Image: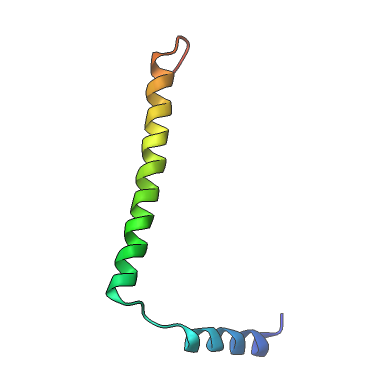
Length: 57
């Protein structure tokens, strides 16, 4: 592990990074929230279907 080279790479990335605008942040958080909701609904629907199938949990 080449620590000085790694640290300079990390510092370069942090200098290029910027704080997102409110519009960008809200779009990203909305899309992430919808993805979480979709995965949760998919899991719940699989659970509900398996509850009605004989031999389910």
